[in-house]
Image 1 (tube, rainbow, N blue to C red):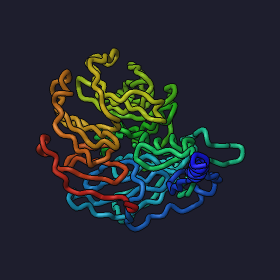
Image 2: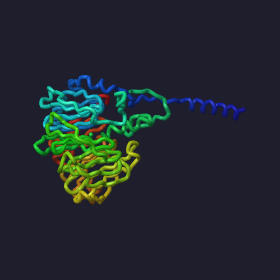
Image 3: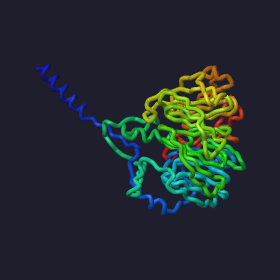
Image 4: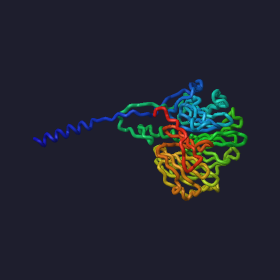
Amino acid sequence: MQLLMSLMLLLVVSSCEDQVETTYTYQTQVPVFLQVNSFREADIIIEPGKPLDNPGKIYIYGDYLFISEPGEGIHILDNSNPSSPRNLNFINIPGTGDMAINNNILYADNYVDLLAFDISDPQDIEMVKREEDVFPNLYTNEETGTIVTYKDTLITSTDPNMMWSSWGRPAFRSDFMAMESMAAYSGGSKSGGGQSYGQGGSMARFTLLGGHLYTVDDYDLRIFSVEEPTDPKYLKNINLGWGIETIFPFKGKLFIGSMTGMHIYDASNPSEPQKMAVYEHVTSCDPVVVNDDYAFVTLRSGALCRMGADELHVLDIKDLYNPQLIKSYPMENPHGLGLSGNYLYLAEGEHGLKSFNVADVMEISNNQIEHLKDYASIDIIPGPKSLIVIGPDGVCQFDYSDPEKLKELSCISVSFR
């Protein structure tokens, strides 16, 4: 009898355990169908400065810091004092992801269009040009005039198929790639040919060189003439294959990162860039920065990155037609990176921010300087006044005048943390 009662109690307990459910509230993205005419006819509104919600890309131009909100718009901050950046205003640009600035003209995508804004006076911004249908994508239906975009949405669920993203936020498996893809969208530019360019990060998809704007999407390099800055003109596109992610300019060359390798293009004739070489690697996400002799490429694993490697590759590019891998270093989950002289700053995702002395490229692992684990990071810009780091928690700036010891100057946190 005692044995029977014990068995019955065990069954009751097991039954109770089987019925336990866990409820999650999480942010994901749901599809939204838009008519092309609806966003073209809507006013681009310049709003007062507001808190960060979901930072995507960073860009600097003069004393100003630009921070994009994927799909929403661009924050403009007065960064003349990096210890106390001042929020000026917000350009409401639905469907935006990337930006670049040439001679006080800001270029940004608006779904399938390219917009140009005069930001000579950041307090009085004016849109000066819309170049239509220059960013076609897989989610455009030309017959019906509709596009598919995605909207961040809070959902409460007990679905057992839910998983945790790399930032510790829950998501459905089917939505994981969409959340990770925000990190893959941000270009480094300096100046040239009478133009005055800003500076973007290593994960940029827009960049400027030789009076031309270059953009990349999953498959193509697109070329625009911006020799007349207020009147950008689409010229052509060059198919690069698949998995194209980032673009970085250096001394008349374009270094294009993809999930399968790094493309090098000669842009000495800026309207007709010519392929010089392709360095191939295992399938991973792949931003790149370069100096005169070497390219530093991070390979990253993850759902969007086909579960590739987590490594830093160093390539000898003295012969740009024949780049050679000379050393690879294991990393944790490297994202963007920035190079300043002999110092490399590397965003390790949720694992923090690392810095290295890379004077000896064969001994980088033995020359790590710092690992700031509390700063989850996606991309980095070594700017003239500060080292700017963007991550899921916001944007932080550091004094790096002493590269051996970073000193935090300020942090702009996202509004919901």
